[in-house]
Image (cartoon, rainbow, N blue to C red; front, side):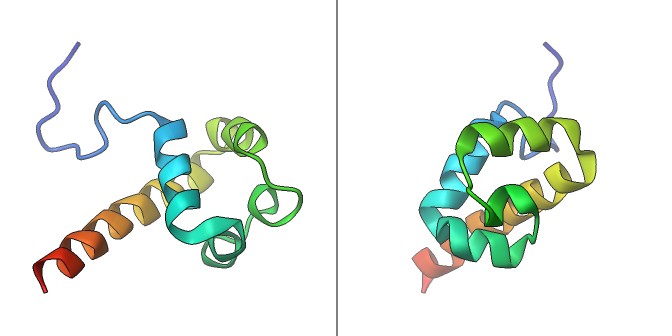
Length: 79
């Protein structure tokens, strides 16, 4: 396995990212932040994973929100 020291997402599974976002924001807010149907209409982890694995632009937005949520949590911890 290649080393990717500059990639903060290296080694983190998509289902872990999605579960973190659902725990942090809930489905309703997640659907507002990233308005895609798999988050707004009958959401589930399984259907969302299926969609995100096939749709690169949506996956990038989810990964970006995940990194933002980690930065925000880190900031809150320092205050």
